[in-house]
Image (cartoon, rainbow, N blue to C red):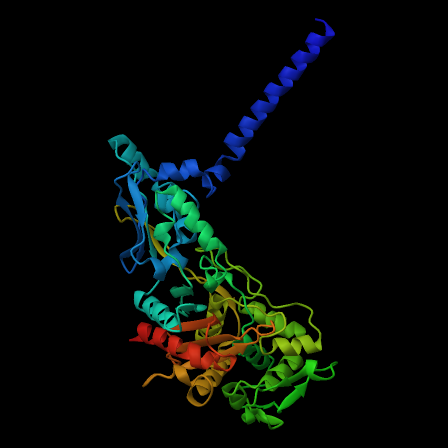
Length: 490
């Protein structure tokens, strides 16, 4: 064989080998990733010809497949679109989000636990149906959260999360602004693409689930973490006298940049006040000094014990990790004491702080999927509550509860007070750090204080039309938290 022919033969052989390697790589190593890729339109379009399982809240569907009169057999429909969109997400040729994505294998019928069902359907010549997913959401709590947040105005941006403290069940999850997932589940693919582009480009970010994907400075609600660290140190309890003052100059600083005040709350003016008074009136000067006395390492470990810097939600994503900075110096540590500097939290995270205190110091891992069933209602899996961390001792949790109850009864959290039921709560108003931008309003609470059934976090990012002086966690978030707690308890 002459050299040119040998060269061409070797080149052709290498091409065949490359093709075989590529085909093997795609069909074996990459097959699962490609099959589950939300942008794989062929797979999703094929799924339109199968009856996808329902997503249920209290036995009623919030996502269901109905027979279609077009080229596909089934149309995904959302009966309560705006209220549940951040939770259910949507299912379409374009992509999948929310529970539709996290539970796709079950809903589509491809889950390994449905193998026997698929085998029986194959033998009988039947089309396989997807499984059902039951959520932990309490519809009354969800209604109260949605209605309360919506009442602040048509352009409000914020979120509400409610948890069952003893289990970690998510009882309510609302994010505004919201959207209609029916428009993204349409079989009119050009319309779906146009709608998605409009929503994705909207500066209000309606596709963002602010309950788990937005991290903001938690402001004074973080004082619960600072108080926890202080009490855990053994140097203070709910009856202690703590440092205060009308102003406090952070260590190693001079002038206004390091000067902490209490925004006119005269109750904080004495050099020492009771811990109850400090919490009731949210004294910045107190919690800055407590944080510095606890120290950067102590504050860091206490924040992480409540779930900061961690991922803990498996049923819905993506989850943004709440952040507490490591290695802060003294002035930075002082600022973290009242939820500023580089402290960032999601509403879910702050609900977990309240729930951990309510649950005697144990933070439960939050979950949204309660039960998974086959199409013929056989239970495939039921979520068992699990402990995420031991944040504080039961004694410390009891002391914190006393402080939070006093804050509702005598202090800034009074808008959450309920007749005949003792409520524990804490307000927060966090500076945005952007000149001219109003602060963020926060509120966390749980009730009943002596037998907690629900813990709530309310975050209000923006309320167009309201003056900065009107943005306050108690005034805006307190009534919403109260309504959610009442919906669960009564």
